[in-house]
Structure formats: structure tokens, C-alpha cells
Image (cartoon, rainbow, N blue to C red; front, top):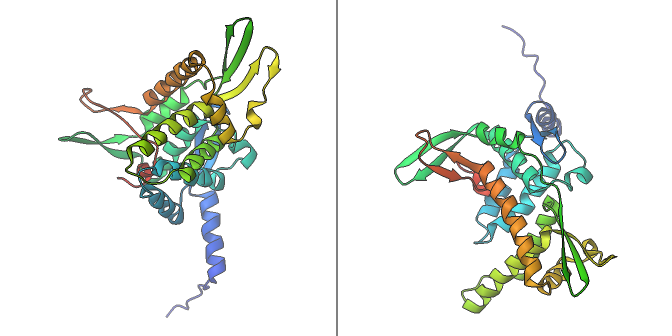
Length: 270
């Protein structure tokens, strides 16, 4: 009878083995458009999937909770430093989300309509991301009565996105009151506009917009003329349309399309 020479690991050693496996085996490369290079990212673990589930059931505003949960996962699992990761933008966020989802399964079941569901390869989206040219900041001037206002608009970073979403989530309560609902919608609109603004100057005076608190940025945007707000919205709409095109997938018969949402449910469905 052969002698059993296996060595029982301590709990701490077992955790270290799993951590080494996670770092070296359960990893993949993901193309980051803004960095114009691949980075390495570890597969999400059961604890992180549990946190995603919790954010998915966190009321009707679960996307706000998701942005913070997802940010924490990126910082924990990606190979780059936090300083670099904090500069990644919302398109990079999509790239990482799809890469993490592909680690779970390379396909996802998509319901195009009530009687049509298909398993769709996520490689189609990955290829679109690889071909995407990262959007550079856009500046424009508005001149009124010899006063020039310059606005620079840029894709928000994932860190900025977390900050604005957390601010909204913290300051709003669940309500059925119609006036409060109107206030939530208005604040969400102002917040969304505020986080795309990178800098503001009047004539040659830089207003140091980036140093404002989130609340101050929203208050500032409230005071901007409608002509400026509309130009900002036009740029945001263009960028969001590009992102929507990346996330839009087509059924095998070519007759139906569906745009994937980047939220907790992406990681919790087949």
C-alpha cells in the first residue's frame, strides 16, 4: 500500500495559494483605449460577485452603487497603479467590464424580443473596443457682449463617475412624491452635465473648475447659459452614441439589435 505523502496546508497557506493562482492563472489581457495598450486584470472572485449582486438589488438607483463596486474591483484586480487607473474613462470602463464578463463566459444570453433569445459572443464588442479611437477633450468658445467663455468637455474618469454617482445616491431618498421625483431627475441631469466639464475660463481667466467640490460644480452648471449647456449636451450625446454603438449586438438573422447595459446584471446573468 503506497504511503500518502501529501502535506495538509494551513488555512493561511491555502489562501496564499489561491491568491497566487488568481494573480498568475485566472487573468486576461484587456485593451484600454485611452492608454493605447493592454493591461492585465484578474478574474472577479466570489466575494466580488456577491458585492455586485448586492449593488444590483440596491433600490432603483443600483447603478450608483454599481459604479463604486465596479471601481473597487478595477483597482483591486487590474495590474496598473491606482494613479493610472483613476485616469481611465467611461469607454475604458466598458472595455474592462466586457473583459471581466468574458472571463466568466465568452457568450451572454440576450433576449432580443419576447420570442427570440440567443447566446451571443462578446468578442464582437471586444473587437469594436479595439477599433475605437479614444475621444479627446473638446473645447469651444461662446462670445457674448465682448466676453468670451471657453468650455472644455472630456469623457469623465471612472473615479469622477463614482464621485458624482455617490453624491446623488447619498443626497436622495426613496420617494413617491412627484416634486421630489422631479428634483431627482433635475439633479441627475445637472450632475451628468457637470461631470463632463473639464475646465472653464472667462476671457483669459481660468476658473479652476476642477478644484470645485461636486456640489459646487452642480451649482455652477445651474448658472450656465442655455446656449452653453446645449453645446455640452450635443458633445455628450455624440460620445454616448459612440458608446452605444460599441455595446449594440445583432441577432443571427440580422433583423434585431440589443444594447447591453454595463451594470451588475452583466455579471449575474448567463
